[in-house]
Length: 346
Ligand code: NCD
Ligand code: ZN
Image (cartoon, rainbow, N blue to C red; front, top):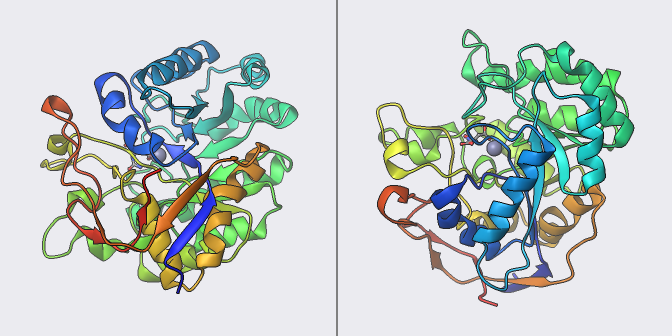
């Protein structure tokens, strides 16, 4: 069993950085490990224009630790108002790398999202024409649909027809959480891909209710059955280029999580790489880890692989109990737990 692993520097293809002082609090945890990240646009108000994305990008750059060469890859939040022209402008800008579809009401800050997918078909056509990837939160928002079925329902009702109709649109099924989702991606052409989070690889839904309610294991899409988790591990460790890292690290303050109505989202940036390594080791697939973390994502997005490296070592490491201070105290996912792999300080 290898004790050390040096890989090309990874990227995070699905990340929530928030804004203002929370951005300052959480950014170092990502920058420490990742060279680039696809930054989600679900701020309040959401990032719906090229101008807003550029302004947000500037705020992220301004918040970076000194000497950091981290690159935020910006996204736009798809609304029924966005025009094909704006999409094209965004593509040509070189700053925007995807447009995120949130079904209205499906998750945190998604109220401005899309009510009826057919209303954005002209925009999807424009995206296909200028090769702008569509990033999808693949859950129906209908509260009458069982929460554990919302991904499968969305795939059958929305994603399958959409990918049939726009057959050269690049699509990422973000944070795939079910066997059904994995099978869907496998059934499509190579330009349909999926990101997989550490929590969906590491835990099943029992972890949300293990001896009590565990709010830090609550995210959307909600964790699913063990058989789903196994399908995700099989996909991630298969070497199939359509599956790659996207942590969905999504910080909320401790008080917003440990609450009678706790927010969805796990702040997993500090533990993510340790968990991916642990999961791949357990599946006897450490030889596939670098492709999943560092190669498949850039290839999908048509970007160069990073030139720097990152060293992982098989040494126990403890996840910090908290990050930030005052109004921004955040409890990392797996806080206080000992993990088997850590990132070597560079
Ligand atoms: C995300 C957030 O908090 O912004 N929450 C989550 O549970 N994943 C939103 C999202 O990606 O769904
Ligand atoms: Zn997310």
